[in-house]
Length: 272
Image 1 (cartoon, rainbow, N blue to C red):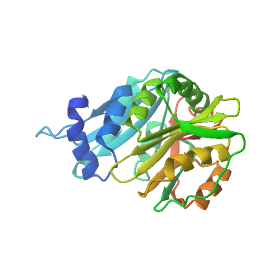
Image 2: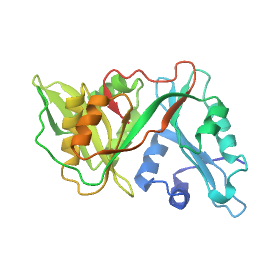
Image 3: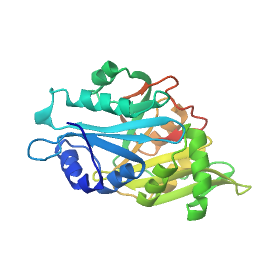
Image 4: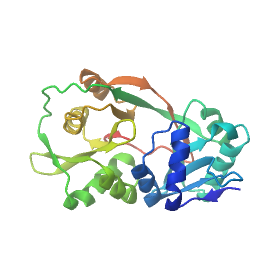
């Protein structure tokens, strides 16, 4: 039987995540619960053996993630049941999307998802700070007064309002900066979030690749830990800039979507 979990189940979900070598932290799960729902199965002992998270944004798009099934419970149809349940909880107008693993791609195709893009996953084991300037813009620390404008910028780039998610993600972030132009107008932002195995740089929103790299550099330059950045596969200029700073491409999993108009229309550089 599929169960809807609550924040009381975070410790058990972390056990499942760690067992299957996923990279979720307790703070990640609090962020997910603040803006979405988590479903899954328990075994006869009450242990959580599967999970899926659904985050529904304001303008009828949804992100599906954290699809995990314990190894000894695979090939029993649990993942398929979870995907069917997720789609049934969403109204027909909602456009759902996810980032697929190699193992899960067949399952998602069977559920009706189609590949619409790819995510380029970059890792830096040792960030290389270099003198870098972007014309007409500068960075500063994000403050509470910036939140409304951050939500607007994120919505313009992402294609939907992610207010609840961003509120929790900013609280979770170790570093948070905004981008401003010479007229002191905010034109972008970026966050750095710690996970059990690395520092995730993102989300990042900026008007162009050079401005995005300025934000990334400000967030990354003092870290000695491994860094991770996920970005749309078509951001070729930004990829070259990142590679010049020590980032290396690890893999490019597919973005898969379910719905009438499934992929948000990015109108600026946007990193997940």
